[in-house]
Image 1 (tube, rainbow, N blue to C red):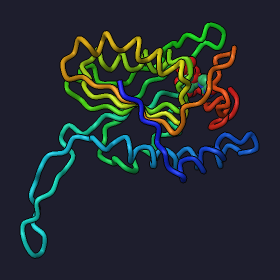
Image 2 (image 1 turned 90 degrees about the horizontal axis):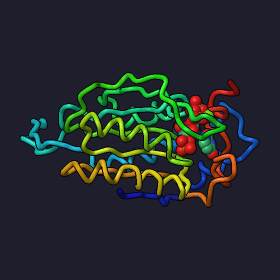
Image 3 (image 1 turned 120 degrees about the horizontal axis):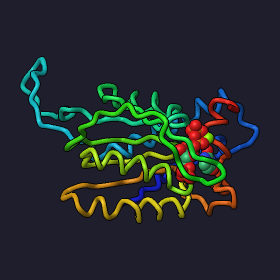
Length: 217
Ligand SMILES: O=P(O)(O)OC[C@H]1O[C@H](OP(=O)(O)OP(=O)(O)O)[C@H](O)[C@@H]1O
Ligand SMILES: O=c1cc[nH]c(=O)[nH]1
Ligand SMILES: [Mg+2]
């Protein structure tokens, strides 16, 4: 499993404002959207394309187009929904499947409350969207589900990740990936933070991403 921390001054600038406790929900949503498009540019460097030739007004021109079926984008509700528009702006022809998952804030275990994904993902390239990779329980469960349905090349895009979460995902997915020849897993994030606190929140982090995007539930 590969982890890529995007090192770019614009990413760092937007992330700093996102972390700021004074940033209101409308600004938080806009910054999330902008950040995802920047991260998606990095995350899609290895998107599958096929060679084609088109006719320019002057001559045949060799080029590429996205291989079909196009990638599947999977936002993890609720907070991942805030990343969807920024992603599909870059990949407008992608298909979108939804996973609803909520972490029990006492046990820190995730529960899945919605699954609107194709049953067969054999050979598919998938991009999972979730702003926070904390203990890694949510992302590991989501990735396991995709791999179990046959997904071959999965990239998770997170705004922030904790070292503990990266390790947990690596531990839990290595066996599943090892059994599948050619399967690959990558995490792309804007920052790798210091640690988790006793409540399982990323420190310094940005607080509860879902609440900051959409308000308290
Ligand atoms: O790595 P973990 O320890 O599993 O925690 C991370 C998860 O917690 C947050 O979602 P939450 O469960 O708060 O749901 P929400 O998106 O509805 O706010 C976040 O968006 C991740 O999905
Ligand atoms: O720091 C954290 C951890 C889990 N979920 C969040 O929204 N933030
Ligand atoms: Mg939340």
